[in-house]
Length: 354
Image (cartoon, rainbow, N blue to C red; front, top):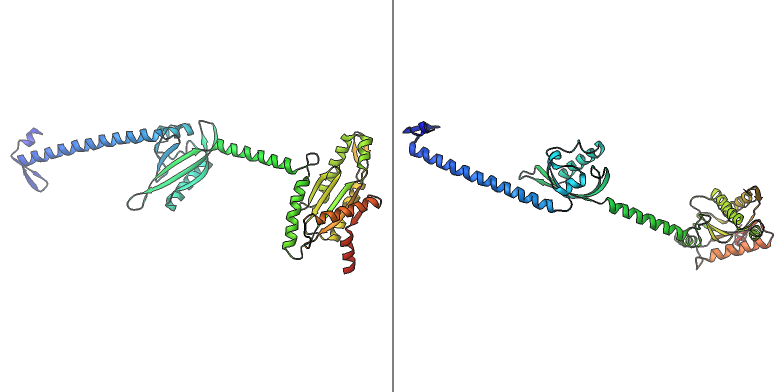
């Protein structure tokens, strides 16, 4: 270098430089190198500061490049996934996450870059720390260069697995409480409360849609007290459950068979006129009469009395159809039991129309 510098002049490209000019260039280059070194040192200090800051974030924070390779990750993310940034750096994580999850991750990243807007969503990810799948609530923000080309994906993921489990447990408890409030414990049929709620809905539907017809059955097990007195309450409970099973075999899924209390039951038959309701009632009555309960080497026969009424859209109150069906049931009892009776006013009205 000294030998070169010692020359009076030399050629730099097409320009002939003097020794003094050459020294000026060397000084400028040296100053520029020192400035570059300062910039690099500043960038290094800034990056260390940035890393220290993101490590203070208590939730998983990471950055991917435009090819979904990990560019940056904080300590919370390492702890959440049970993976180190050193292992994930410059990879898309394929060797750490299940193939089906990776397929979803990469497709989601691509769609976010194409959508050009931040996205929030729930996703499932494998956690080596927990050795199980976890549920994350993830936020991803795409970033682009001056030309609009994808550059980075800034991501934050909050592990909400425990919260989701707590929500599921709460929902299960609510459903169980609702079932207790609306279901008869012994027969597992809807109870009186649920039946009356369903009756209100059906009455409103019949009133809303012209020409719609629905019917109600009121049912009472004949001489049930005698069964309890003769065979005991355990046999009586078994008989109630037996009858509930026969009801389930008879009625449709859209029907609402319910236990109103004691040995009294009721059924809502949507879209069923009086004649069709009577046919269904007779079918159930015959099934009950020919299907005794056999338990503990004992055979207990059973019959049922049934009152039938339609839900009339001209009724002013929801329970008027229930009252008509109950009166018809009372007549069935008076007329010898094990029979079906129609609501008197509706039966007469039907005859007058025929």
